[in-house]
Image (cartoon, rainbow, N blue to C red; front, side, top):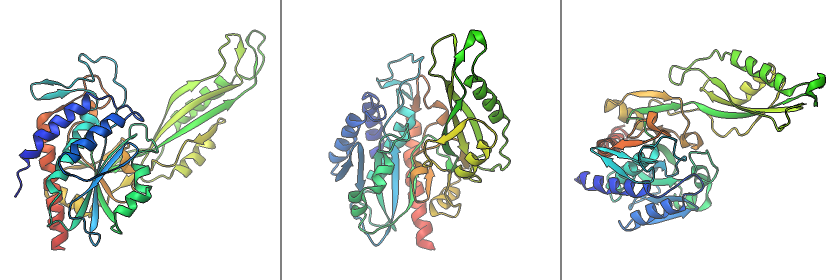
Length: 369
């Protein structure tokens, strides 16, 4: 039986190199090159679609189902307040500091190590496909969503069906079995321009502020034990008018809505529109709430191993997958997008062990049923 320790140091070294390559969303080419080269030097046949890298296990059998390993290599821009260079892998004791170390570099390299561990295995009742993808931080369309629809990717599955996935995000290796969906609404309040000194016009800002107050009053009654309440928050307000003496005819604001599994996006918009004067327009219906069944072999494996489960308030690439997927990984979501972002080396080592145990136990559950 393989020793997982042989893959752990390589994973940590890969993460150090990833930190030192800026990889903002839509600017991931160099870090994708690095991951591709890392896999190829270990005799892994890789495939590429834009900045998305993927690979299949050595003994891929189209008669078996397939599990997908996914995490992202793009990052947000560094938050203000870093005390070290965010693009330098700074190791202090067991703490690896740097942009993307926790979200989601640690989970990604842990999944890569797990894939390498099982790459030539013949005893699993499922295939494995590894995907290191782009644009997660901006919910972009050229990441996992593009890959899953790609004809070449589908062709390489050779008829095998993806029946489960592991989405690498920092969850302290707890199982995020559900996620709230994300819907962003653009709201436009329309008034009438006029001169401020003469009390003319209809101030669109006043209309917008009244609507914002109405939105704050909205209570979504259906609460989920896993993902909590649906919540709407106004996050941006602006007007194109820059003159101090003109009453603006238009005011725009943005509403961030985190939706639990009991509401559809369509019914939320319909309900909100009856309560406000501003016109509400959704940017997308792509990021819907998701939940993996509790009797899925991956979840049952986690429960067998004593992993706690919860509903996640944040949204990930899991929302774009058309198959059951479990969000789980080393690190802590509370560190994401913060100054001096870090992950502990032991979290990576334990994360690799945890992923391996999860796959082995999933295989045993499938084989005994």
